[in-house]
Amino acid sequence: MEALFESHKYLKDHSIKPSVQRSAVMNFLIHNRIHPTIDEIFTALSPSMPTLSKTTIYNTLHLFVKQGAVRMLTLDEKNARYDINTSAHAHFICKRCEKVHDIFSLDESMYVIPCSNDFEIESLEISYVGTCNTCKSN
Amino acid sequence: MEALFESHKYLKDHSIKPSVQRSAVMNFLIHNRIHPTIDEIFTALSPSMPTLSKTTIYNTLHLFVKQGAVRMLTLDEKNARYDINTSAHAHFICKRCEKVHDIFSLDESMYVIPCSNDFEIESLEISYVGTCNTCKSN
DNA sequence: GTGCTTGCAAATCGTTTGCAATAGC
DNA sequence: GCTATTGCAAACGATTTGCAAGCAC
Image 1: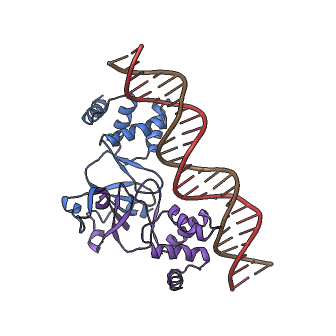
Image 2: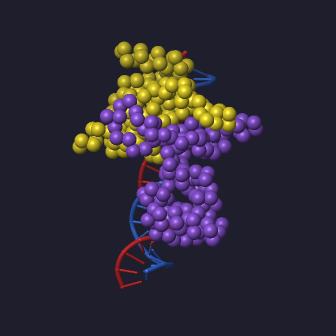
Image 3: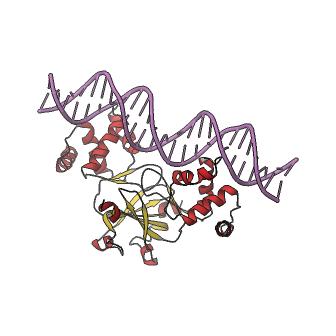
C-alpha cells in the first residue's frame, strides 16, 4: 500500500485528481523508470485491469504532461515515451534494444546559447544514439 | 543551370545515381535550408512537377539518409524533418511557428560523456524548444 | 443530478508496402 | 531487354476524436 500512498502524493503534488486508472499509471511510472511508451504501459497494466483502455492511458498521460508531472520524450520517429524524471538530464538510446538510459544531468550553463537574444528557451533535449555494451557483447 | 550542377555534384559525392526527381529534391534541400518535412518538399515541388508523388520523396530521402547525404531529425512527434547540413550542430525549434534554426556546432568534447565505457555513441541530437523573437513580438 | 472520467469505435495522419507502369542504359 | 525508379492504391500503426455509458461528490 506504500506504493499507492506514493503515487497519490505524486498526483496531489501536481493537482491531479486521483482515479484508479491514474494511480495505476503513476505507480507504474514511479516504479518502472524505463521511459515507457503508451503501449508498454498498457501491456503492463492490462492483465490486472482488464477493462483498461489505451485511450485512458493517452488521456492520463496528456493530463500528467499538462500538469508537469511527467515529461514527454520524442526520441525516435516511432512512438512517444514518458519520463517521470522531469529534471533536466540527457538520454542515451540504444539502437538495438531501444532501451533509454538517463546519462547525466544538465546544469544551467547548457541553457546559455550563443544567440540567446533571438530565442526564449523553454526546454532542452539532449539525446545520444548508439549501442549499449550489453547489446555489443551479444 | 548552376543549381543543377550543384545538386548533381552533391549526389555524385554521395554515390547517388541522379534522376529528375532526385535532383529536384536535392536542389530544394540545398537552396532551402529550412529543415523541411516530406510534405513541405512535396508542396514546394509539386506545382512544377505535376506527376511527382509523395512516395518518391519518401524513397528519395531514405536513400539520401542511407548514403549520408542528409540527416533525419526527429524534433517533434508529428513528422520527420530533413537536414542537408550533416555536420554536428544543435537546433532550436519555435513552438509557435515551428521553424527550426541551426544554433551552434558541437565540438568533440560533447561526445565525451561520464559513462562512455557503457555506451558506444554514434550520434547526438541537441534541441532547444521555445519561442523565437519574431513570434514573441507578434 | 451534474460534471468529470472512462472506454469503445471510428477517424486521422504520417509513413510503408505491393505492385504495375515507366524510364534509362 | 534488363534493371532501377517512379507513383498509384492499399495497408499500417500511433494518436486523436466523438460520444455514450459509468462514476463520484
